[in-house]
Amino acid sequence: MLDAQDELPRLLTAAEAAAPVEAVDVVAEDLLRRFGATRVSFLIVDLTGKAVVPLTTASRAKAGRGRQADRIRLFGSVYEHVVRTQQPYREATGQGERVIFPVTNRGDAIGLLELLLPAGPGREVLDAVGEAAHVLAYIVIANQRFTDLYTWGKRSRPLTLAAEIQYQLLPLSLTCEAAQFALSGNLEPSEDVSGDTFDYILDRDILHLSLTDTMGHNLRAALSATVLVGALRGARRQGADLMEQARQADQALGDHTPSGHATGQLVRIDLHTGQAELINAGHPLPLRLRDGEVEEITLEANHPFGLPVALRHPYRVQELDLRPGDRLIMLTDGMLERRAEKMDLPALVKDTRHLHPRETALTLSTAVLDAAGGHLEDDATVMCLDWHGSQETKRHVGSGADLRQASPRRPER
Image: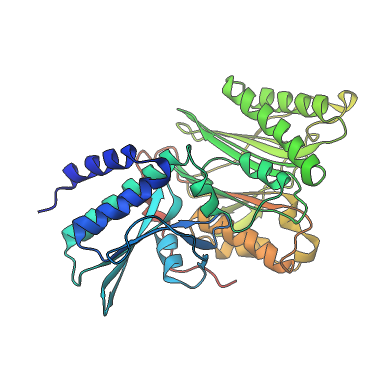
């Protein structure tokens, strides 16, 4: 009889003993042995969220190291179904039972674990494989600090220097779930990187969000974004309130990149009271989905970050009306691309209301890219926040995801 409580610590120990680039292979070999599988693959979701890459493959015929493989497009595939619903997939084949489990941590869809098992695996075996998939998420998170292997798997094409800098400014996970909220961001870079960034961090009592858009393109924009994000993070980590974060970001950008400026929004949400505050530094207004209706949130516009001293004024902290069940959409002006002006963004926000924020952010930014004919003149960035409410204390967890957000389908695009 399988004893997951004994097997999982042993699996973690074995993966930790291996080299960082071989940790996933250790898991694959273990699953081959424990469950009589004839094939085990780990597929990592690439940075675009639109494809998966077989990062390691082990089989009875040829077990061992991962090999480079072509990217597999997610749209319309069974892999997309598992990523979207966060539910395992089973299929009987002439060679055995094909099973696919999500590899996810706090809503961050890291990848998929695919096995070919002997026909008719029992519930005990399937539960054990699901536990192994969840453990695999932690193994990837821990080992990606030491190797570029997982970063390589996430990239669909080589990055320019500006794009490399830009992606390093993003949070390590683009998605996060807690009891009170679920959020995700997505960035579709333009052909000439335009300096969009988004960030979030979860303190003991506070959720911090930021979305910024620097002036210029390519390396100039990336360097300005580095100064801006660094100033915001530094102020936040010092315990500064929202107004002081904005002041320090404004000063840093003005002092170090005097020819540039940036728009942005900073949000602070108290997880215990639900009180939300926002500073709007000349940025496009956010959208709010409430009770099935989408509306633009009216905000006072303060000056952008980085203006000359003579033009600077104290930022105003405004109350953000956020209620349980609301969805907040923050976006950069690239989401309002001129060539995509025929796209009805509020209607698309409404149509995607049943999707997880991860899927919604991806769908919205992809729709802008498609409407612009695949060539953006400006970065298109979006953050999607679902606010469940301060009264929530526990997530509805399954395989590392909050299954309240599972969706039966994704709108066609």
